Amino acid sequence: MQDTKQIVPPTARVRLDSDALVANWNSLNSLSGKAKAGAAVKADAYGLGVRDVVRKLVTAGCTDFFVANWQEAQEIEGLTPAGVSVSVLNGIREQDMPFALQSPAKPVINSLEQLNRWKSSGRPCDVMINSGMNRLGINVEDLSSGLFEDIEIDMAMSHLASADEDVPQNDDQLTQFKAALEIVPRKRTSLANSAGIALGSDFHFDVTRPGLSLYGGIQRPELEGCIRQIVIPQAEIIQVRSLRPGDKVGYNAQYTADRAHDIGILAMGYADGYLRGFSNSGIFLNEGSELPVLGRVSMDLIAVDLTTAPDINEGDWLDCEFDLRTASAQSGLSQYELITGIGNRVARYWI
Image 1 (cartoon, rainbow, N blue to C red):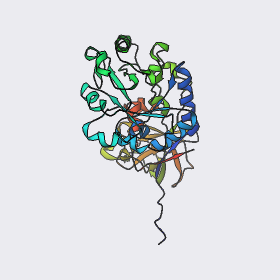
Image 2 (image 1 turned 90 degrees about the vertical axis):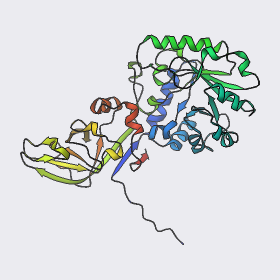
Image 3 (image 1 turned 90 degrees about the horizontal axis):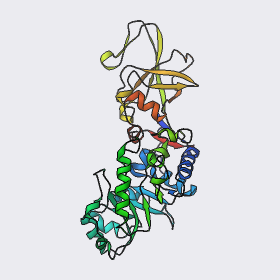
Image 4 (image 1 turned 135 degrees about the vertical axis):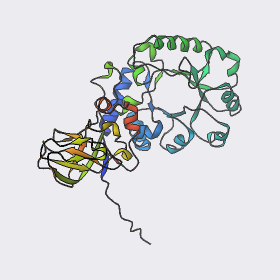
């Protein structure tokens, strides 16, 4: 029987720029110097759709991908050809073993317990060194050469806690990581995230692991001019209404009109990841005109000022100002939260 299920058009969507994604990876790869840039694609490629992102980056030449857990590794099985590796950053629990033993992905070993668990597998792994962030990883003082007998380590890695700042912790972590490399046998080494790439060649080693900057985030001034925006949320106007002086808008009357003007009601809200931090501070765009958000962002709806766009009608679409640094300043949210928080009901489409 033929499937007659109708496709319902969305009222909110995100336009994603394929060329900008690839350009960002190429820029980060170039900035990595003698190292090769990989790609952090955890959290569904920061919320943008991991299968599409992996396909595009494999075609661009990326050969190392990093996910958080084995569910995420499973999502991209079949997309990574021979010579392309997938590393599971959260390591290997006992309950992960049945799947992991038949998966082409590698665990990133984060503890002595995980190391002992994986040793009998006969399979390669990566090893995370705790160089001072104190999340995951084996402490430098717990390392000894005898720990790694009969196990094949591809990458020895660590993670920078404050690479977006010029603070002593960066050099302290570098020193700790180098001390660990005197002990840990491995094929390759990896330390720098997106911001770490901008710290210079001392931090690059063999493989860099950009994440946020692949998707348009800029954490350090050295990345300005080479990272392009790829994420543009868009919302449909579902009603145009006219305000009189004194009319109030939205929950708790956070906006009161001081003049007669039109507003547009957009079918998007905090359930879609456009959070309440954008209340009275966010901006939507129409052919270059800025349309400020008025009042409180609600779960499904946003009001914007149409004063500079008098010809807007119901059914028209507006772009959201979503340069990640700008949107972060408007909302008080981190650049990471902005893109990973885009809701599931928002349609994604690549151009």
